[in-house]
Length: 193
Image (tube, rainbow, N blue to C red):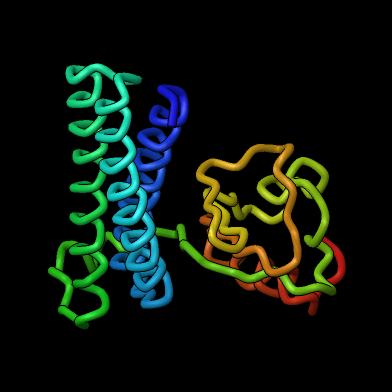
């Protein structure tokens, strides 16, 4: 493993842990157990990445491909991301254990007109095999895709060139009245944006 791939793994841990925090708070605020379970899946993914990074970093030190100081820096950064992931899992755990929310949080949820949702794209969906730019989902539906999962791969902050494939899972936020429209588009029930 070279220095560039070490950097890529550290960046992936950072990106995924940030996504986990967003998902964990969203699961709590919108009382969504499905999203909370996604946090658990991501935490397992990050644990595996972190273990792999530790092993490969130590091998690189042994093979003199990485200095001890560089290895310590890499491991400390990755550990910080892993700790953030653990904290996000603890937040999601509150949702999965059905802990009653504090009254102030309940008030903020009632006042919020933003919802967070998870949809899976079916084969007959108009969304399938198109880019976010082609679809103009944010401007046409009001729902902004903030993350996607394609198999085991996660994409945080997709852009207009990001393609949506069949069976992709989209995580989006937007107005409550737009959520149903996005779900219908993803399932194939609605054929026009």
